[in-house]
Length: 640
Image (cartoon, rainbow, N blue to C red; front, side, top):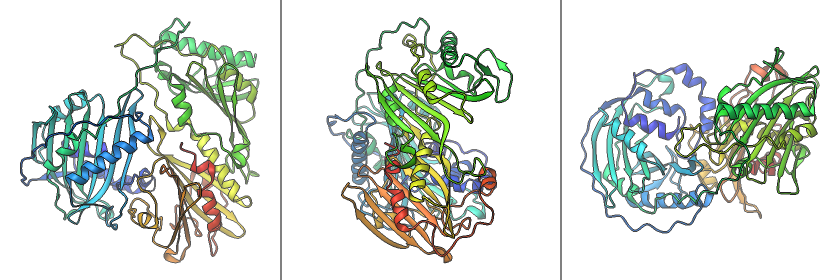
């Protein structure tokens, strides 16, 4: 659950007070990977599901006169734009709460703002979301701000919601520049199961302000306490100057690019266009393999048309997709996923680039053709243990092809197969098929399917191949296993976080660990700020050992920590780019004992990995190898 969802629930009526304890506890290992520098865990998100209110009183808020809006020249959604909004928000919060000190729950005060942000929305209507943690008058607080450009519906939804029965103050007023403003302050109580009392507060105070500006921009700012005994030290009136601050503003969207002339007579998002695309793909496959035929599923009957997992995928106007349709060439089966993207340049740029080093680099090429087409072709890596003798990753027979056309659209073709039904060359020709093109958009005002937003699974294989290749490079002997555990949030700029569990066994040593790649970390890293990360966010990541920090000639910061909790040895290494793109690698010497990040004991891994693996005196990778892994170019540049 996101901060937005949490605070929406805090403002609204609480549902029945029940907690599925088993589900919460079983999800903790995965939930902590949704970390963002504000110190919230996914476990805390269930707070809103069990809240019961009480009442107090505060004074009436007052808006201050707005300052003139500064000129905005940044590009919407860019890192420079996020930096600009971050700076404005942090400055506004600091003015609104003069006693503010940046800190996460129970952590020391730090000089670096504990504030993380990302882009939200869709191309042409990009917004902003940020959240963080600070301390005021000794009270730990979390804050969240969202800004959307088309805010009329959001304002109507807020108005329709009305005041919660748990609100101790709730009202509306007009801002100094004609803004419509709603404010509330609430106090909540909840029953917390014993197993979760160290992670969930039994009492929460919250305050929030929403504003609809005259240009349609909608802002939602919320604060809440994180400890049951604390009182909210910030009056709701102190928050209003933040949402009316003219520097806290989105960048203007550029003028739309005129649509290219098309010879396609169908209209995007219609059944007729879906049939056209299916026919074009079928013809392209048949030209490469005359004995090609569609199947209903793996091992299924022949089918005259493709049968994918998402039948309505073709109906997206700006990103039609056919997901995992099975076919056969002779006696060999394969699955194909096809997506066409209207804003192809954006889709190309947010995808993981071709690796530049080690195993994965040998299986990825970029080709530029006369006329302006660019083509990126990847051979995916095989999983460890897919066969009894596969102790190391190798190139597989699955391919990911991306064709960025001269008209700015992109064709993405993903082919999965064991024994090759099609070659790499044949797959490339299909991706370049001229008839696989987008139809014109429907007339303005027509109800259509969603526009393109990069989905994590679009590039799971490409990202995993880069991570596997990096691990293979730093541990060239022994046995390795890397599990793509999950991805973080997705948005217009692609994935914000990727997480991989891994295990290494070599030279009589063994250990398991985790690789976490963040596109834009909340903190500028140092020994002081790493130590300030909340334990709940890094469950089983010991960050309280011997710490060293340095800055490399390329500007990347390196923080290394050696911890010895409960008789084990844990190496943790952070490498951070100047733009806060960050890789963390942690590994221990006691597999499946909770020292770092345990591997699963069942499923795929349980069948593949040797049973009874024991660790040694140190982790199976040296501290230098862990540092090399965290700083490997294919990891540190994985999320551009």
